[in-house]
Length: 224
Image (cartoon, rainbow, N blue to C red; front, side):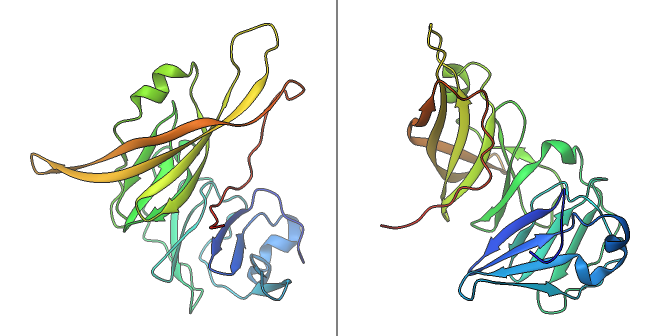
């Protein structure tokens, strides 16, 4: 990368990785340093010239590219958006509630998803502000003590994977990384739309007695 960053946020769109914010000191004052793009095909980094009414140092939420638009939330909960053709970020003063508890924003089937606290997956439509809970995850929440999702991953337009840590009771205390594939279905209930998750499978995908904790940076699905 061309600029040292801390507290940045990144998203993948087709063959490019967009990195936003995380610039500090005098570097942050120059908006030309604020967005950096990695082209996977050419293996090169490029700085983008952008306009924003505010230069947030930290991006609290992951950005989401939806119909050629970028959405982001800074550490104060302020919501910004820009088209990827003009790169002119704007805000209408809207603020996200509890931004520190809304992580891993994803977009699928015209819907935004994120992980909440207590092993919850939340959803809302892009033009709305109120988050709703995905129903049907009670089985996982009951089976795993302290169930807390650490990463979401989109499988397809109607399914995703979730990852969490588990430490089975016993003398060995082996730390495990679990994964579950969940299919999503939308159900209108009395005029109110609900999204239900159906657990297709769940299993540990990594285990080691030497681990004290895990930090899963990114997860993606591929066809083999």
